[in-house]
Length: 139
Image (cartoon, rainbow, N blue to C red; front, side):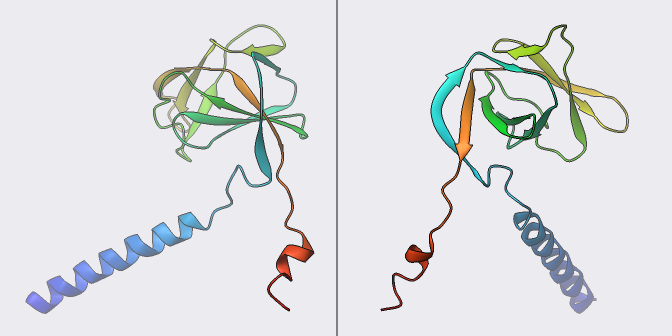
C-alpha cells in the first residue's frame, strides 16, 4: 500500500514538472521587442490585438508593425489565462489611458473583472544578436 502511494505521488510531481517545463517553452510575447521609453496616451484601434504578459502588463499590436506595452493601473484578474478574452466597449477609433477593459471567460462569458489602462509605452525592435558576438570566444 505504501509503495502504491509513493508511486502515485511521484507521478503527480513528474506530471506537474513536465507541465511547467512545457509552459516555460512557450514563445515569449515580448520576444523581438524592447522598450523605447516613449509613451503615448492613446493608440489607434485598427487591427489591434491584445496579449497579456501577466495580470498588469498588456501587449498591444497595432496593424502588425507597431507595438505598445500598457501597464494597467490595477490588476486585471486572470488576464494571463489562456481561457479568457478582453472585452472593450467604447466608441471611437482610439483606445486611451484611463479607459476600462473587461476580462471575460471564453466559454461562459463570465465576467472576471475590469482593468484601467495606463499610458502606452511604444516598443521598438529588439537588437538581433550579431555574428561577431557569437564568434567572440572562437579565437
